[in-house]
Amino acid sequence: MAARKEILDIAGRQVTVTNPAKVYFPKLGLTKLDLVRYYLAVAQGALGGVGGRPMALKRYVNGVEGEAFYQKRAPQNRPAWIETVELKFPSGRTAHEIVVRDAAQLAWVVNLGCVDLHPHPVRAEDLQHPDELRVDLDPVPGVPWSQVLQVALAVRDVLADYGLTGWPKTSGSRGFHVYCRVVPGFTFTQVRQAAVALAREVEARVPDLATSRWWKEERHGVFVDYNQNAKDRTTASAYSVRPTADARVSAPLHWDEVADCDPAAFTVASVPERLAVLGDPWEGMDDAAGTLEPLLELAARQKQRGLPDAPWPPHFEKQPDEPPRAQPSRLRSEPSGRRSGEVPAAAPGKTSGPTGRRRTTIPLIEIARAASKDEAMAGLERWKERHPEVWPYLAPADVLVDSMRGRSSTWTRIRLNLTRVPENQRPPQEALEVDFDPWAGLEQPEGPWTS
Image 1 (cartoon, rainbow, N blue to C red):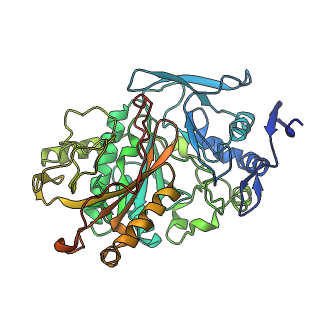
Image 2 (cartoon, rainbow, N blue to C red):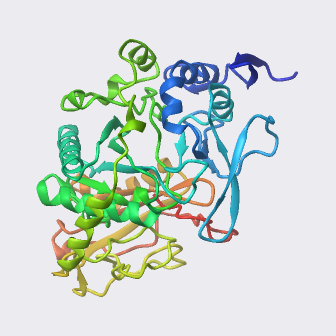
């Protein structure tokens, strides 16, 4: 029997929703059709975030509890009214990515299983010059939500001092986003350079709350992730539904809402009414574009003080002013087997921080590399059972759970920072509990796919 279909008439086009009753959010009973109808209800705001931009497809074809996979290339079998644009990746490969401009195209993309939307920070008409600077605030485990909001307000103030208007939104996950509209003409390298300068200035103003350190084992508080502005990186756009059990939304806010906002209040159930009643807090964003020149001047002054470029994500070529790409930690007694994608560890006592000061290496061991987070966490539980004497020393921030992007899907890495464990009680690096190779049988990825 053929699968049931629902045909919607949207903006004068007929959009087919396949398997409309398929449950995407099991705990809420929300179906694919419910998801499509949500995006149609908030299309005014959602198109403000994705409209005219190429987007990578993150597809949850089996719902949010299933495994997602990434698809850069637009499906070959698509209606003639689905627009695409050709992007070039650092590897030299190219891909035609979808560009959404109206509600019908938006619904068509959601029907592919795209729960959240991941546009690039460029317009299809000018792929080399971003018109957005994106500030992604990523809290270290154990950091309270109130601290994330304090850092967001500090970001607002720094942006204002350097002539830019920040537009806040919840991420729909643990963190927070602040976007800025940028006047045309700046390159990806310049936008990232401005983001590095911004991150370091925020850290200087609220050093106990925020960090600009790239390596997870060096972070504290809230990480100001400047590398979200590197070319080919994407983040969940405004009004995107996130793959959480309660179907949270990455919701735009007014600044006077930020100090006491609750991310759990913004869901598929509540955001359409909020938009209808209050309007879009990001209305007018396109009219508030600013120049990056003041931040780039700040970056130049930071460089004069001896600050080098900050580390780039894996898979990017080494940049001229980038410091040695070496982790401030070492894997004790490297486990057997390949170390795919691992950055070479620094020699003990030989690394330096962003100011060039000498720093001590961090004792770090790796527990698991797994195709799924559940599998990796199960490996961690087995490790805990073997080392019950170690676990009480560890704080939440010492458990480093990394979501890594492979060629077309994510995988999970777990490491432990043993700094708090007395040296004579630190366990050695052992064979990994789960030893998954995301690149087995594949060529190297097309772009910077580690998150």
